[in-house]
Amino acid sequence: MPSASTGASTTVDAVPPVPAPDAPATHAPHAPDARMAPGGPGYRRMSLALFLAGVATFALLYSTQALLPLVSGDFGVSASEASWTVSAATGALALFVLPMSALSERFGRRTMMTASLAIAVSVGLLVPFAPSLGALVALRAVQGAALAGLPASATAYLAEEVRPKALITAIGLFVAGNSVGGMSGRVITGWVAQEWGWRIAVGVIGVLAVACAVAFRLLLPAPRHFTPGSLRPRVLARTVRDHLANPLLCRLYAIGALFMTVFGALYTVIGYRLTEAPFSLPQGIVGSVFLVYLVGTVSASTAGGLVARLGRRGSLYLAGGTTAAGLLLSLAGSLPLVLLGLVLITAGFFAGHAVASSAVSHTATRGRAQASALYQSAYYVGSSAGSTLGAVAFHAGGWAGTVGLGLLAVLGVVSVTVFGSRAARVSSRRGPALAR
Image 1 (tube, rainbow, N blue to C red):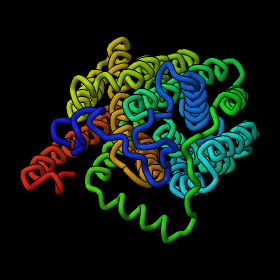
Image 2: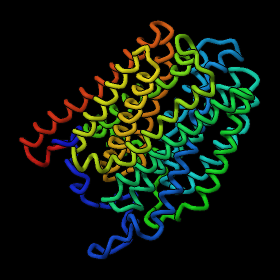
Image 3: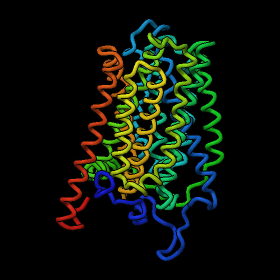
Image 4: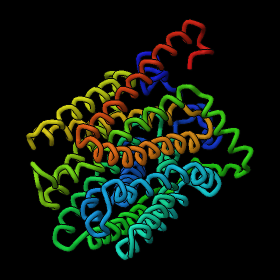
């Protein structure tokens, strides 16, 4: 990405709107583009529907994260053991996202997203009744596996139904829904749990997710540019192999995983730090700390403008630098400085995620669902690893240990971006055909 990211073109507009084989255009070569665009028919409904899907996904996926101290106390387990209620969900999502994306190629994006949300919200209503930590972890794993059908299908739906110039903005809105879901889930559970316990809190999130799922299905326009693909394992394996052989896509997958390692680690253990001395905050106030997710909503939804000004590479450097600054600031013993650090970490993470995920959709010219699924798989592997390793680091070295883990991951983001930029310059000197 010369001057843009890890090897892609410098601007969003530089990517030609070539229809992928799995989403052929239904219009003649010189006819107006019939796909959705801001201000056009169906765009607002589509944006709201996928925003609500993002809210439900993150609210369910991380519903126990702000409640881990209470889960630890209820079951008499350590922070690292309680963190498996988060890691099991994100790990199962990472494991199942690729096969779910293959099913979406055959049965349709909207069908897959609807089924995923239906199963996930049903399990969410059972989670409050888990009799043991083992049962809770098992239910959360099933919930994560069900949610695996949504992220890759959503980005593939957008790549097929939205005009290329509006794609990064549309994906940014979906990511913004993720941030609102993550924020509202944690804030609501914090205050509800303070009064009635963690079980009632996750039950409330389940009901919220049901409402989002129903509204999503009623609002999302029927796809107009989807053509069913093959479920043959050999075809899927070849598509996955081709994506993994693309150096640019692999770098984007690594960037998504590393950013999410930081985010998963920090937000898994922040509740323990803020409920302990010297802060000793009540659970409701700790839950309200997640209002900083609003910053992520803004940074994700404005990622398109950021790329237009700085290019993808510049945007990734800015996102990584902002995240690192927040990590260092969070080491302070002052609560306002810690909160400011969380604001910077959140802004940097969501901006980096929106830039990287949209670059995947632009880069893949065929098998977009699988390309997005591989990104989502790497992303949630990072989340699962971050949740577990962050808790282990916190147990071993306190907050400084978790921050150290985060800084290593940010260094990885910068290193991958630098490597990609150098590789792109070398390839461009050898000829456009070799430039990846």
